[in-house]
Image (cartoon, rainbow, N blue to C red):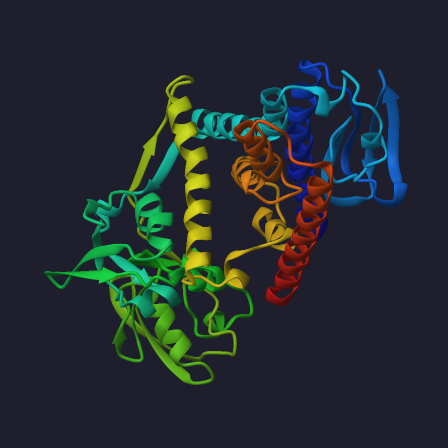
Length: 439
């Protein structure tokens, strides 16, 4: 069931974005009197259609190949590669008959809509949910490094004070930010009263892609007591009780959750002695850790300090706009890292499987719309890349035409379209294969 929910969310999210993107081209073309012959969600490759109807001379439908969508604009060399029409005399309602500036707006229509959608989504999320984060400045016990954090030199109890010289106030948006995860950032930490700087490796994004950002660091949490004991677990056999405060494991103090977890993991298949405080008295509990590296207790920890903000309707607009354009900034930096060789493409790029895993197996509308907003901005950025067959390729050729005062030849545009098509197919196969290998 979880897999079906995941697939359903991906199909819904991408369908919304594809329809709105193509609607941008459609509306711009109609505004300039250009005939649109087809409007399709997904591709009707080899003429296979799941559904179609015709309205006012335009065929609307759903294709069987879920790799995007398209609008077929009369008199334009596009993915349909319909060159027969181009051999006839240009008609006033065709794309090729219109001024270059109108054709440029038509080609930018989808990208513009993607940007507008991204801004609106992040605007509404800021208005509906506000912002909340862990107050890093009030973390009395510092942080606990994960796999990535340990590799860069962070130790349990370190307090991260600054990122690139700016105070690290919010844990998520400052310490786990793209600024840090992209590499080369400098963290100023306090360790046992001394300050020092830790520079993030240029290739840290490889580790982030492999282990996820949660393996960088998390707030250190002090344990309060045992909250729940699993039935039939080793903890039940050891006679743990709800309300016990764990003091030590095999003589090693375990004040913090990470200390307790670490001691349990170190003693898999070994006997352990856990010292707890119960009703004002110390009690020793003996047992053995099984292969799952757990004993079967749920622990109550101290609450984390939270920063929370709510925003009015208009007040949310600049916040949503900032969040939306941060997606494009991150994409630009990410591609720059790939081209510089700091980040491996197979680590940084994800395809449909990777996107599906981001949505997850449960419906969370806050998360769903956040991902839709992020993907909308990412699609705007990707479509603006100057690759033939993408909107950015058409935009580039139109700009060349406007500069030189005459259009590029149909022969050149047809060949460029084919080259772009094969580039996109290769990229799709790479990302899909990469997803499968990661899976």
